[in-house]
Length: 242
Image (tube, rainbow, N blue to C red; front, side, top):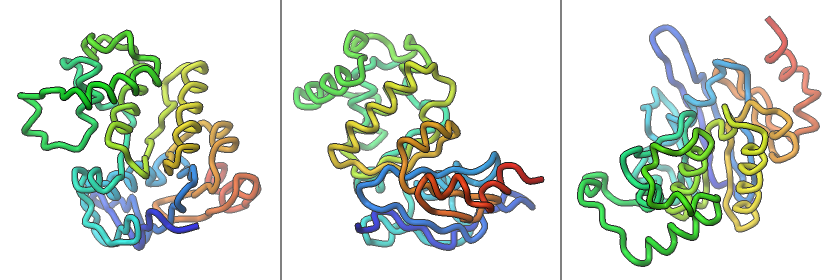
């Protein structure tokens, strides 16, 4: 199994706080990999550094076997998409337009957005898949919180990524929506998409993800199958220790 994403020696500090401390891990192609750890362990910071939303103080990122300079638009064109803890959508645009914007394009084109026939067809297929087709012409701001998370996921898939980073995809949504999110992940994974998921819902992690990467205080402390991680004393200490 080849490595799709590799990070090595990532460091990131905020003032006197080191959020990432020589952090390194790999995401094998074809997996649903979890990135977990107690609050403040550096998970979202790692996502932001990997995808170019924060500059690293040190370290390297390689995607599809090649070193990359993290930049959101460049990585999207290379096939890496991501979501955020709080769904990032354009509330004043229609649901359909939000999905279309998931295809890599310069942001300065936003004010004159035009939806081609091909993009419209593909966007409608995604909205159908995510149960949002009836809202296609509505402003995205009218959607519920859970629907916004699904919309953001659909928009990421519009770019046809090979790797998707999901940042707490089930946070704040009800059990029915959690089940729907899991099924969407499983369906896309079966179609060949690799996932790296930051998630606090451990029952979901244990039934969905393999391997499981664990961070604590910005460092990698474990990377193994779910059953091994559950009994790893370093992981138990990170979650339950002082």
